[in-house]
Image (cartoon, rainbow, N blue to C red; front, side, top):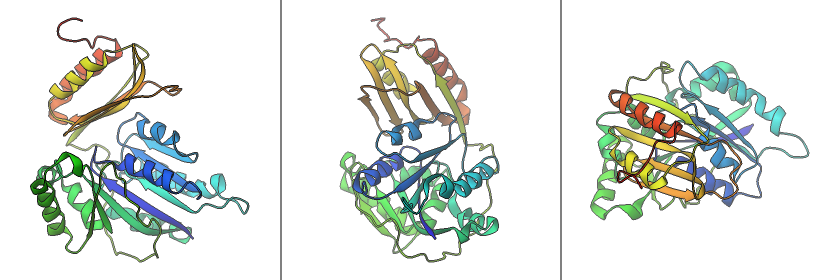
Length: 308
């Protein structure tokens, strides 16, 4: 049986950062990372390939929705042939679900497809942002489901918030799953067991519909240069922004932009050889504003307000 660790958490909580930390900590082990992206842009997969050799991306929705579950099953079925051999066996598979996923259907999916004879779901980790978690609980039911399924909750970005905000998030988490292990972290720098003994959880859920009424997802690809400071300013003003991330070309070279509801980070990426593409995810009622920004990025019209 191949052990599986499932990582969940809302958009921008730090799931990909946690996977990168896993790859760094377990360089001596053969781990295969399956990265699910809600948008059509393969941003997380590209980020993971910088630190891990064995990465499979499944963009364009949730692996637990009717539109992508078939592709997810196909990928899982093919992983052993692609990555597993007597000479180089897989030590385990780490699956990053999209930020909007409801993972309650995972055990049922494995059982119904016979994949439970190949894979053992050994751990479910949830990543949460203390600044946004209490707010999201009020509007997005899948956040609750992610905590209900979890063995451990990584409360990330604790360096950005005060003790009262962190304690409020912990109280909300334990209100959903009393007794769950909560690990505070910065940049998801935690050392957690990935593949404990397999214990059936009795999870039950339904496959989600393809279209989620809460979100609009856009993908923009362009080779044009953008003003990085102007882009960050536009993202801060974009109403209803849940997440924006991707690689953009600037006058100073390639940069990786990561914007969440609570902060924006920008990092230069010297030698970036992948696509220049960016994903924008907003509340559906703000889709028009996101489309305007996406077009401006595509045509290189993102400029500073002072025209400089």
